[in-house]
Length: 84
Image 1 (cartoon, rainbow, N blue to C red):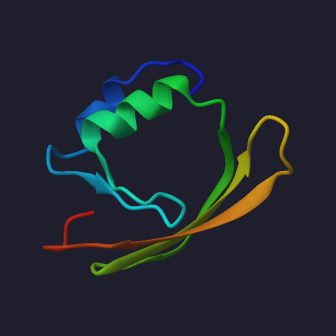
Image 2 (cartoon, rainbow, N blue to C red; image 1 turned 45 degrees about the horizontal axis):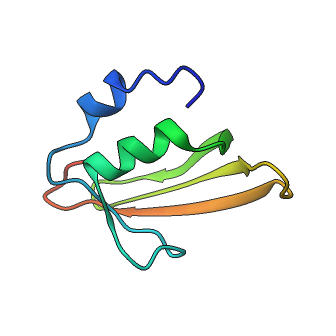
Image 3 (cartoon, rainbow, N blue to C red; image 1 turned 180 degrees about the horizontal axis):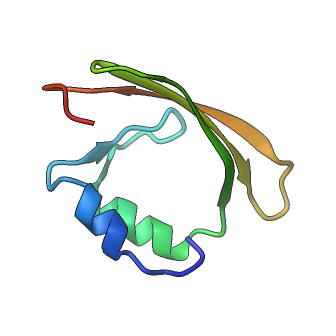
């Protein structure tokens, strides 16, 4: 997050938002996710959606992280109650 303006992110994440990540042992809450975006040096580019259904969303993006090679990330979102 280059601008460090969290207002948009705060408005789209619900209060019961939970971020589950394969590399994290513990899930992150809305508050922890927003705090992470303020301190991370990771840059997300080439964001693409391959499937946007009522029950699942499949997306990819590339991740640029200092001192690491650029990597592609595959995201699968399971939508509960048909909310995205």
